[in-house]
Length: 430
Image (cartoon, rainbow, N blue to C red; front, side, top):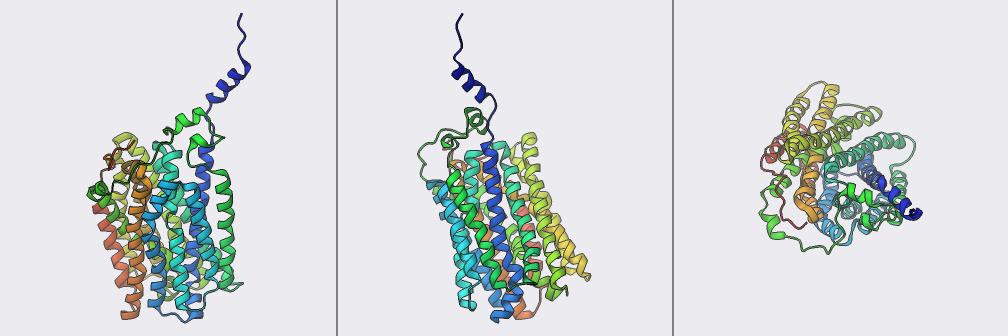
């Protein structure tokens, strides 16, 4: 009677259950988004103190806020291409080290010019974070989990941003704003080192991944990266509409990441302690909206297909957000205004995770460039918002003029979803 080979039997048994390395990859990317928003958002709570210390006008502060998002937008597509071409292992490590250095240097600025330069270079460094993450997900996660994963990633970023608002407010009570930035910078350096040592660009190359997990992921063996189909991208109605939609969402998004603490203290009369708590509220609502929208889009995609499933959360949430934000802006009750803006932010965020999932589905092997294109236009919206706010305050002393435009852009973003077809890939390179 033949005797079974113990080693072969062991290998067969090992491959019965998939390994869980993809879950740890997800955890790493969640930590990455958390660190990115810790470093990105802390300046908004510190802004009134920075403004007083450096004698900045409202217009100058708006330009400083806009410098980060402009640089971030301008470098998104090149950074996305680099992630596609050279892999997210190297590129994400580079991104985090760079922005950590710029975060630390923010505490050493001496005036408007140096602060503007550091914030611009901060944006240069952080560009490519989410396109790099999209490349990670396209290789490491099954398609059915893309919306959920992006929902978790953005939700984690927002939760950490909310914590950063309150934590920074507490720290401002016991130390100078100049010491806060170097402390935050140290977190990113630790992440970058551990990521580079552990991660691999392709799951086939990771020693902790077995054949069963590769089947769950559904990835193909690595192959040469094809040329970017620029002509097809420029002709893609879905990509053009996706860029317009994201412009509208992120235009409003950056009010909550930049001017909100100033608005709460100067326009609504809250003190630093109350502003620290209330500035958390919209980010918490945005986190819930992103997570719910990602989950809902995955569920609806399985039932209705991607064309209806991916579009529905944004098409429902954005019109509600526009109406709620406008009502909050015009409210005479400070607390109702603050709470209403948070609710509006949550509804507007329902379309964010589905948008990133659509990038993967229409982009394929060019997901990094496609997400970079969408995020470029989104951050151009993020660049415009603080500039509009600063100009309105400087010229007319009015918050409401610029805040009403947030509701208008939410409606514009909802209309753009009608032209997006997630089921139609830009070019089939798989």
